[in-house]
Image (cartoon, rainbow, N blue to C red; front, side):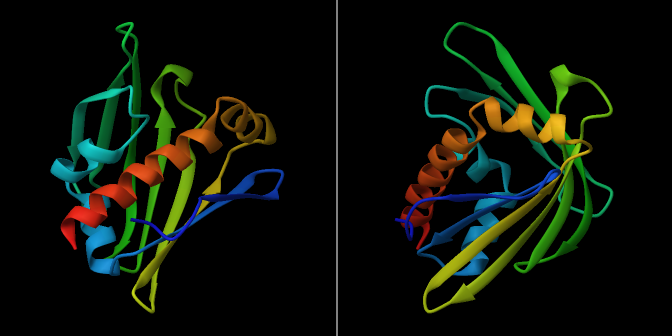
Length: 159
């Protein structure tokens, strides 16, 4: 259960804003995004298997997810938590590991609860316009929609 589709807005040459409303309290959205047992169930496309889901959810803590495609190819993502204000805001880095260092994204995610819904807003800041455009061209918008659909379905089982 979610409150609609994911919105992707190009804010500047180096910024993207992703927004989605979920029919769940901020507490549950926060838990679903910070606990490995939940993240494994919604992160990535449905055809991908989340084989690694490591989360050290504290400032300075690291996270790493590995998704395996049906053909055996793996896609690894990792980063570090910079700020955590439980159920309200989290700032972390994200790197698609095959790109190597120097292409990390800084993500600021906010959780705004209102009238039984939580608006998740993710502000992505890229190192360059080329990195932003490459991410968009990789299918990021469709992937975010599918992941958020899956997150909404999971939240429906937790409420």
